[in-house]
Image (cartoon, rainbow, N blue to C red; front, side):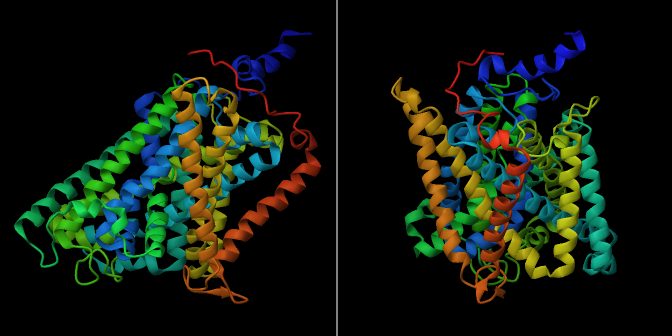
Length: 519
């Protein structure tokens, strides 16, 4: 056998020495450190964007218990993060949820878990691009003091053209590799967190001065989730809270490109989670003290402003000049997340293709940039097509698609949590640490998210959920959510006919956990 014949096989078994049948994929090893990985996780979540779009909605659902619901949403995410950390130590593979659930539960469950991640990410990418576009024109109008420029966002052709340009730019940055991604993210994440911190400080100042009639004095009762008036309100608020934390697992998707791949991504995800919950609590408490959570005036629960809280509070809280910074922060948040959200979807597709669960063409890694180039471009094209079609068909359809997102999130997170407990089932009696971090905590997190999944599925049936539109008397959100999962099943069955080896369990097997060699 020639030297050239040997190298591909060696590349495929570099990781296999520690993880059995897990394959190396040619990604740029050592491109990201602990801080860079945590920044990517924070950026993907997009805290400023999440706050402006859900702060008011959450207050509208649960009132003064908004901070408590933020903590309640943090709990299942933290428990699932422990599962991700433990699985990553044993199998640091960029396929993350897909790879781990295949090894725990077999190829079909794993394939659907990967599909849930991919389709959820495409939906979010389209939404992020739309928000970034809207804030681009809104900011341009604020800077020029020209309402006609802001009004350009209402022109569908201009809006779509701008949106596609942003998607193309984000795809190009992701295509060029983790080094380019990291540099852009440091600046964008630093900017949005700094402006958010300034907003919190100024909101506390306004609250102390009693600047607004709707302002409130702080109460520890705000931290009591049991004070929410009804279970329906609590569940609705919890669903919004869970969405606000989604995306931290991007830290794990870069594990094959991270220094100390077995431990660093897990630590980075926990750091990102702590930064997020701290940011959400500080902002929620400060805003609630400053303007209250009622439905009148500047109150967070005012239905006229609840879908974009910072647009309403920027001027009153920060003044006309500094208020523009808040618009910049929202734009930076959406733009940063648009770019980093390509990371998990491209690497999941790369892993699925490498293990023959998708066409082999997506397994190609760019020889210079060491990125899954074709998978990244595919994600960009899919996002652009999806957003364009949905926008032209109906704004209601686009809105309902975003509402259906929670179904996909809870699906793949809960499956990953259960996969952790099952994969490590033989180790749970070895120590108290193994019992809790590999078994008890992941199972609790999985059960909580599975409960939200089922409750959301039931609520979606009601036509009043989402935009209020229906299909044959059934809520559009239900039709879209279940339809997207059904589409995944169809694609899986078609793929199984073309690539039977993976689905027979011959490529990625249910091997027992192996000891990991430290980096």
